[in-house]
Image (cartoon, rainbow, N blue to C red; front, side, top):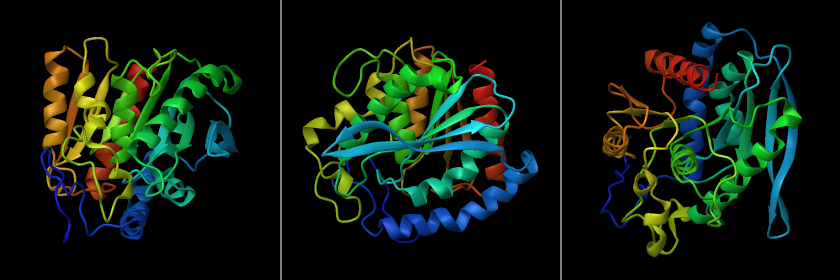
Length: 296
């Protein structure tokens, strides 16, 4: 994308300085219609019952919330925590844009937990990690309330949401350092930053990156790869200038060396953001297929 700066492992300025939440949401909305049309070809009109603003935790005197999309009819007993995050910002508007990504899962019998975390710039990446970590433990503990098997819950997200999804999948401890009571059974991460080294500090576009650089390694998914990790699907465009594809390449190599069940889908010519056209169709089918295969 014009005016964007690539994320690299050594770049001290971190994410592109020309991007803002408004720019990010414009990009999301501009591609959502195309993506939604693709999904319309894959599935019938969404059929769901939605529980709004389910509180999964508290901080600063406020409730942390998620929306739960339950299939209206057939349920396969599996769930997916879909992390609403872009640039470690999170909002209801972003969730509505991402619905085209996860509603096909609901139509195929999955219960989707759309998790919103404390949003940048007020809250930083460590806060987002703490929030989604708390959310997943809550989901696991209350899964039966929604007819979901706690051993059959996956996690997915785009960009920063992909980064947080990988932290949940690869790290066997919560953000507070306690061993996980519940871990994702499968992960699908779109265009995720996998190594945050060199990215922390003052940032004019993504305030969430303004955290202590000493925490960069603890927030880098690539540092947590081990042989007991769940199946992981990485999807990344090779024309991504915001989060270069090497982030996924390096992680995939580490996963393969650790003998983790994993696949890496490269979208030829695709930039950062929601995929469009044929790439969107391939990504949609791959997302659904991965969770159907690994959350049986």
